[in-house]
Length: 138
Image (cartoon, rainbow, N blue to C red):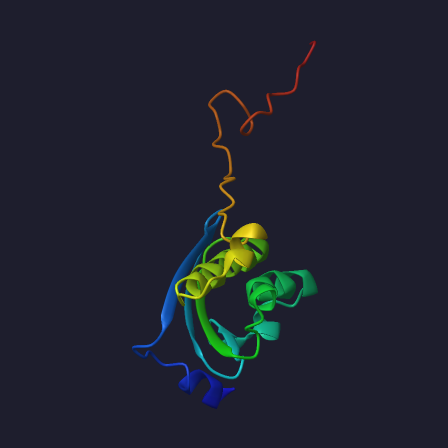
């Protein structure tokens, strides 16, 4: 693990991508390599325990067939686990797009589209965004 992190230091031939989802932000660095994925200096399976979150992160790499040919280093913060996984997915897809190859598969499978849904703000006089106070007859 320690040597995996040291091999992912910055180089000039890196491809960068930024992914966002809700309040999570992921900064992704892609480089040719053996398929090492490091998120916040931890391996993929340590950061994301849930299989569906891991599959979301790996989706752009599997779609383009580059799972074993690129190393990925991700710094992600904010939001929850699901938001972080989706932010990583978008960041990886954007970084793959910058490699210059024809990757229409990413656009066709919806991996380059940002999910714009955000939390609705609380309104005054209500208990949340939409829920009112409980009616009391007496």
